[in-house]
Length: 503
Image 1 (cartoon, rainbow, N blue to C red):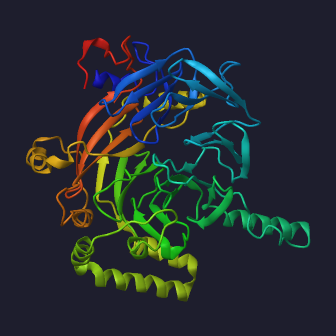
Image 2 (image 1 turned 135 degrees about the horizontal axis):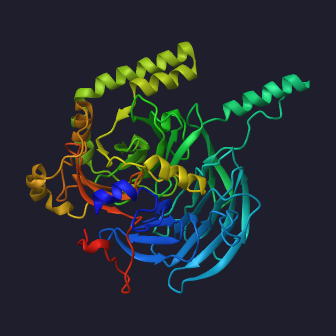
Image 3 (image 1 turned 120 degrees about the vertical axis):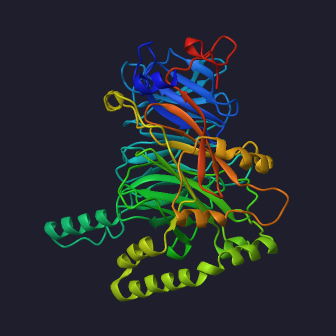
């Protein structure tokens, strides 16, 4: 069934009439995957092993579907194939009653939607509208740069932390009021200002309705954004796709920014995703970056020194034990002098040749590498035609949509490591990546978090789950399911087609 899915389930209708996938999205707590198809919506539970728990095939073609955590609230946007599925119409759907509970109409095509427990954000190509979720009244309209791909990030914390940050490509043109005296100079000045705005990200506070900061993240347009659940970190990637940056808010200057090298060849970054908030490594989180080439890189992000001491951040403080701090110093002692020399070299280059060269030098010399990399299954025949057909219907690229989850058996590391060599090896990182991953090994405490789970969708609409060893950078494929084919039975759980057993 899997082999056949790779051949004809690639987002396109297979021989058995499988619906074509137009969009996919994970919910805020990474427990479900919502899939928009040419006939409606499906929801898969990751906690149940990727089982399809909801399916509605009377909605028409859906190009955007977003869940509110694991609640019955679902927001959908159609493709415009009928008068009831206009791409300018947003419907709020109740999955329990299977009824539309609210309708909202907009002036332009909807290219993105984000929501949390209090706020609904609707993104149009030139602006974003912030709504109160309880009343659906517009609270704020934010101008953006041209954003036809709906690039947006929003915090979504399960706790009651008073944080609701929104990141968008900036639409404010600095210096726009200082144009030249005549039309020619004014045009050149405005073009110069617009060029400066490429790669600029604006972070907004949706609770207090203020601009938190503007970040000159990249020299090319923004391709992907991700905010950590607590709003302390913003990850950015550009259309070039070689470097991923993590900015520590609210400062977000170059002293509060870390760079990570995805690769040296250009690639379209499909998604960025921070790992779960709860971790046994104080001051450490993980970031996944998935590209359209079918690779998912995992980076280890360490908090800044003042963040570890509780002096940084916007909303909360974290503590790091003396033992972990000393172990980090011991692990990094061998490379500490080299890193300091490289950092000094890039700073001196920046003083001598300008800030622009300093950023480039920093990307080349200071960028950290991934601690693990997995390769998604290659797409089958007819993939390009299927995705072109989906795009013609208003669908979005689905390859590389990913999240990070806790490994289910974190406490059984010893048994897992013994049986790891018997599993299918997906990929190995370079020697540099392996040495970096060694720093992820905790030195103290009863618990050990040596594994993390990557859940991603490839271009053939295959939902893949990998268990990744953070010490070796090796990942093993655990599950694989074609979301275009799966359907639910009368009891609300999936009934595999063709009589094949569930994964």
